[in-house]
Image 1 (cartoon, helix red, strand yellow):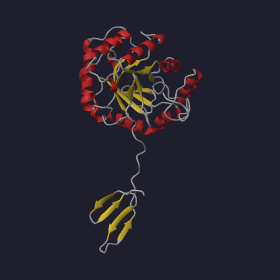
Image 2 (cartoon, rainbow, N blue to C red; image 1 turned 120 degrees about the vertical axis):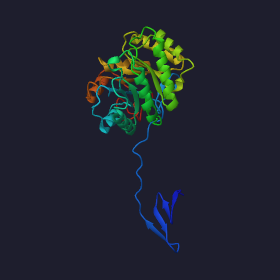
Image 3 (cartoon, rainbow, N blue to C red; image 1 turned 45 degrees about the horizontal axis):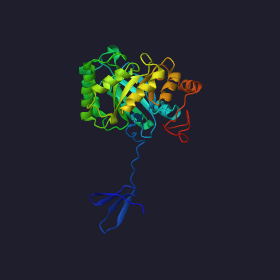
Image 4 (cartoon, one colour; image 1 turned 90 degrees about the vertical axis):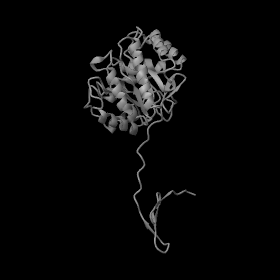
Length: 329
């Protein structure tokens, strides 16, 4: 038998499924129809997970998405149709945004942030929010980084599809060990985020190019005993400035061997489809920086990847494969 839930009103019982039932003086019932509350259009995705040093969605797939700098393009046109197209027709399950940089007053783009949180949720996508480098690429404004996470850290802490990225490329080196002050900043801000968002996944470092094994190992050593890597990962741009594509598997093996997952926060925009194949072969998630930022021709996105022979199992839709007939990741 179907169960019924009721809430007591003075002199009445509210049947949430059947209507409003009021008791009259002699025990007779007067039934008045009431409007049912609509079900939410969608629910946030479950938290991303780290399994054997791999960053995976709640479906067990890797993150694949697009990157946009709202800090540089605060008036970018964003609507539900775009995100539905990204998810349903383009095989993408995540969106990466540089929300503000040091030249912005903290909170200036909160309306765009709130909108992105809802658009991605309704499209069934993840959202990674971080600070852009702006004209301070290769450095950082500690006061800004603190104020940004004081403001945004608690704001989306309960939204399970949101990921935090501490700051994009605070250093411009991938073959020289980072200064202890920068690593201390990463550690300090991680602690600040964890205090207000204990379950949110946090992306560290955001190297401007794929780092060498020695550089990454040094940084991970500095975070020893500080970071819970079951809810954190390493981000890096996929440029082969310091590490060639042939060496990427070794770098990922080092990280995975320490239980640390990685994500390519920007695919080089010179040849995005061919570069995507490198990361797919290495079994690491990625964010494309060319499409959306430089072009919104998503048919070209699909055509380029088809021509390059790049394929993956999407969370939704039938491109590049049928989500209902393929196997993650």
